[in-house]
Picture 1: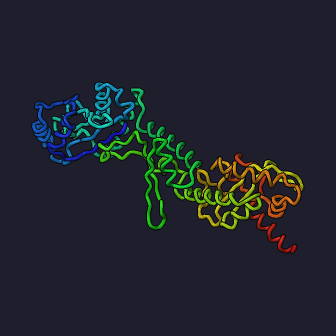
Picture 2 (picture 1 turned 180 degrees about the horizontal axis):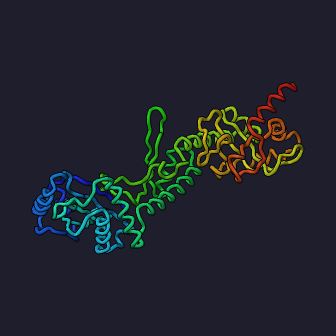
Picture 3 (picture 1 turned 120 degrees about the horizontal axis):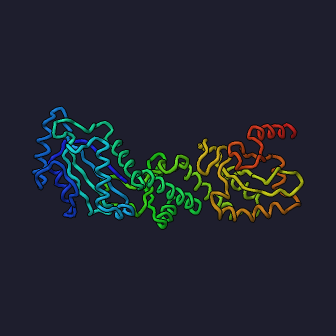
Length: 382
């Protein structure tokens, strides 16, 4: 459940808002309040608060909002029980004045509360320190006790769904415009941010069904990319799109793998070959995958798709591209007479940093340092 709680010195407007909600508010509970009007209740609460002049922010205000698919299933009595128990956990007692109203005018049913931190004996029972955090934890405790999903659990589910859709869409699209359109068809809004230096610099993903224009000021829907995944970053997506676009352009004019590789190298991309098993000179070697990386790429850490010192796996980042290149690979491998792939591979060896990929890659590689050593030896032979 989304929730909020804060301490402040209120006016009668706070109670008026609680009891109105465009005429749809329903008061479901009150305590130690004799009058029915918001003005009268404010006077009562203010009078009690003055019994403890040391506390300036004498009121506790906030709300609990349940996602629509869950909130509409809760009876008002159940919703009220959650709020009361959560308030009790942070210090509100049966001697504190409060008023709770259920609001129905917005997409998500929610319950608002105004409570007096000062009880009728003049004691401040609700500590202000970390009140928002403590109230959120209290709401989660009550939800768990009642077998309901918490806001954290719902958030985890939504983030997983967002990440799945995002990574699948990245594989099928080549630029941000198409990514935004494709994600919208899946029910997600992509909000991109940019700056002069880096261009596109950030991303926020919002489920269309979660958009609630009436409560935007209360809480912002969706999650930033960094909240969805700590591995997938905007810089990686930009590099991936740049590489995919280069590959698509090059493959149109390449009849075999040697031409494909040389054309990409002219565009400042390195091409590394991964074989099934050890490479054997003078024999047909089955290619498992092609890894492509932009030379002088500033990304020096593993990402969601990217592997340090290796680049992007063509078969995993775009299944269509993998199919396009398979024909080039097949034609090159089956050409025994002057096979350019075998000649080139025999000279330069394989440069796949398999150690960083764990069991995902077979240990059929030569490190970059070793490859540099072989290059020096070849120069000496000439």
